[in-house]
Length: 137
Image (tube, rainbow, N blue to C red; front, side, top):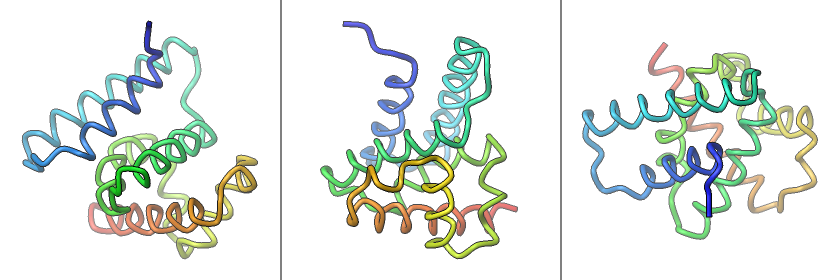
């Protein structure tokens, strides 16, 4: 069974989320791996990864994280290299997390595909991503 580059990307992110090794070295290696995988996906699809793509990946990671009881902060730390590298996060840091999440979900047409619990969890993830962005910029 072959794994698609997107599935591989999600596997890398989930593996990092559940890892107990939170060293700077591991994070740098992880960030390089993620960026390389993103480049591969973009080259294969001959287009940049769009906001809707990021949201779909975040939803899938969020669902898996809920099952594995991984917290919003750990998810945000894991996916930050993805969303910060795309430059798309900066558009949403000026809004509070709830409205920013609703805007993203409405824009991508994914609002109704989530349960209330999943939406609340996504708001927490967006809030943590905003905190990381403010801290790093």
